[in-house]
Length: 122
Image (cartoon, rainbow, N blue to C red; front, side, top):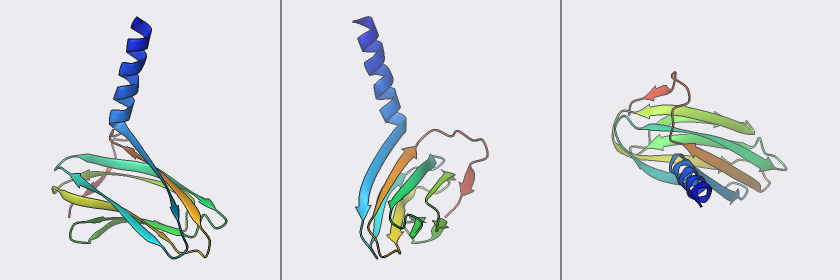
């Protein structure tokens, strides 16, 4: 019983720090997922695209003023890390520029694993 409690406790801690999403992105589709972020909050993650033309996507982050803060295009996978300096809504967006359907998976990481995280001001 003690081991079961310990396992459940560790699982809950894990879910506090990592959140994942998976979605199908149709050709020429653009989707954004928003998060309310606090000042000095860490924001990071890793994505992978799969499909017939998995490199035909563009991934970017914008703030509530539509300022583009980060972008990566033409890569099957990528990651980012940043520290938020101004509280507000931030959106992770995916655009499928290919003519094929792609599956996009993303893991949010709320733990700074690299002391050289990109510092973002909006």
